[in-house]
Length: 328
Ligand code: ADP
Image (cartoon, rainbow, N blue to C red; front, side, top):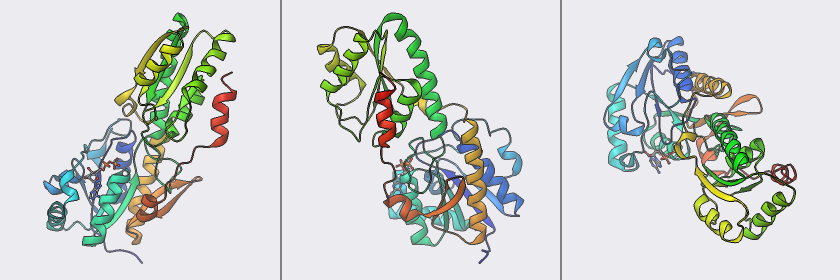
């Protein structure tokens, strides 16, 4: 069944992620190509409440494909969690006759979109945009690939200085609930050890691994610490290790927000374009309350309900084993 949509709005919400601009561009241009009127909402759900909703044309998304961040800005908007906030958002959309909303964000954003769609009957499609790669129904989320590459580049630079001074570096990367980023960046940067939220590694085990490195004449060691590790952050772990293991000069680097920024990788530009294009086409076909995601090499729909309720990431045993075997 084809919908009678005329006006669609797009917003970015929650944590920003590289590739969001490529995705916004695809949404706006696919809509215009199909004869729809397109709108951009500023600052996520806050812009819906504040009526900060702008008409967009094909030129308003020129020259943004390569830019990190999001031209629509993003925000964490507590007011949208309240009934009054949602109602105001709905009234503002209705006043402009907007009956379709495309949201780019993570699980918080999807939770809001689902509530909003259920309550007011607005057509809603979600696009997974978060560096965390933690949504069921998409093998990759927008921004994850760029973040992994950014982290690897930073660790390579740290390795140069670590090697020159015989240093032990603890590098903290993002991933409060998921070790997906930490595990992959550990493999790609040849880290000596990785500490993950999903897996307990005892300090004894870690120190023994680092001692092996010294005994086999490693001139530096790098330990990747996922921010959600049970021993706390990289500083806490470094302190505990330092007390028991004095061989190296120990340093800590928290990569922090640089992991979110930067020009999107080729992969994220293509993924953002595909997901944006698919989101509009699916909405035109009459789909709602769905997320568009990449599975295999195909764009597939997953209901927002499933995307939110099924916990997607499980540490891969072979990758885990590799972090050990390949760093001897
Ligand atoms: P992310 O989308 O990256 O997970 P957040 O968890 O911060 O980021 O969520 C983004 C926004 O989604 C929140 O600031 C809020 O406006 C909205 N949101 C989150 N949870 C809900 C909810 N239960 N009901 C309504 N809106 C929500």
